[in-house]
Image (cartoon, rainbow, N blue to C red; front, side, top):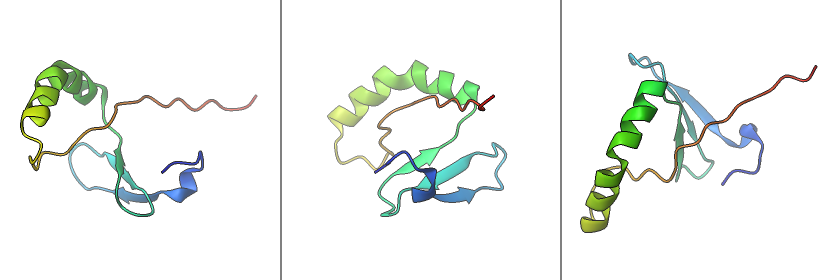
Length: 77
C-alpha cells in the first residue's frame, strides 16, 4: 500500500469547511485523510464504542478506520 514514497498516492482537496486533504492509494482501496486535532480527540473518545459496533455489525456501511497516525516532517539543516 505505502512504500515510503508519497508519489504513489493521488491527492484530492475538498472545498469543505475542514480543508482536509484526501490521499488515495493507486488501487483506490484505501484513503488517508488529514484531520484537525479536535477530530482526532473526538475519534479517540468514541473508539471503543465504534469498534464494538463494527464487531457486532460486520455488514455495516460505516467506514472502517484502520488506524490514526501522526506524521511529522523535519527539514534537513
